[in-house]
Amino acid sequence: MTEMTAMQREKLMADLRVVVADAEQLLKMTADEVGEGAAGLRERLQERLAQSKDRLLALQDVATEKAKAVGHAADDYVHEHPWKSVAIGAGIGVIVGMLIGRR
Image 1 (cartoon, rainbow, N blue to C red):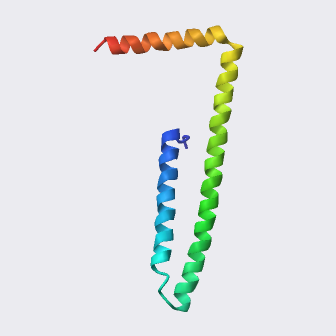
Image 2 (tube, rainbow, N blue to C red; image 1 turned 120 degrees about the vertical axis):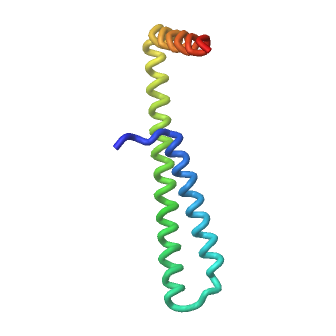
């Protein structure tokens, strides 16, 4: 399975936040419902929501740490190989310029 891009991860996390918020709103709306089954269901749903929130925060922390690690690795590479970095940047700039110039 290929790794998700950063944009896909951010969209997934935003979608999960919306789902959790909707579930919390549903719990509040059904608070008036009485009965043993409804109370048990609400408790289980609240527990699962809390677990989901914790997992979502953990996933966000992991993604943030990975992004920081990649940024530090790129920074280290640029400091260790400044001329290579300049050459790579110039090469990419020439390629982008040629692509834009073709239109």
